[in-house]
Amino acid sequence: MFIIDLAFRFIFALISFTFLGWIGWVGLVLIALKFFHVIHWPWWVAALPLEYGVLYCLYMMIDGALYRAGLKGIGGYARFTATDEKIADIEFKQALHNLERESEKE
Image (cartoon, rainbow, N blue to C red; front, side):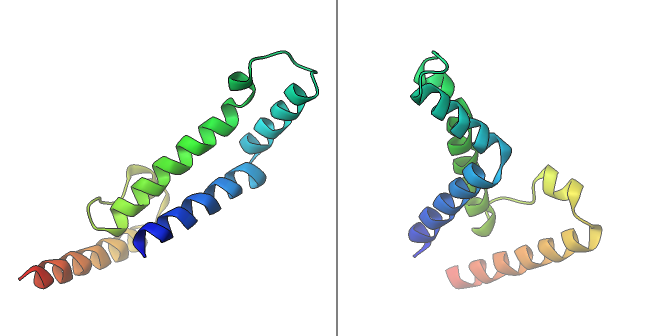
């Protein structure tokens, strides 16, 4: 079930990145311009924004999976943008999750 969830999260993030973000739209416009022979760049150059989207979504999916598994703490960006109360709540939940995992091992 966890692997299927990761695949759905990746696909949803990639679709959101492509159609809801400006970098994705830049990539779609460049691909369209290349397809209609308006620009004469190589395909890999025209698709760079979309390639970046795939790598970014893959990285974030792996990062989130490690966090949900309790193998990674809160990142610097999340710590910078969240309130102190939210960070304390998340760290408390992660500590409880780690205690539950350790008690299941015994």
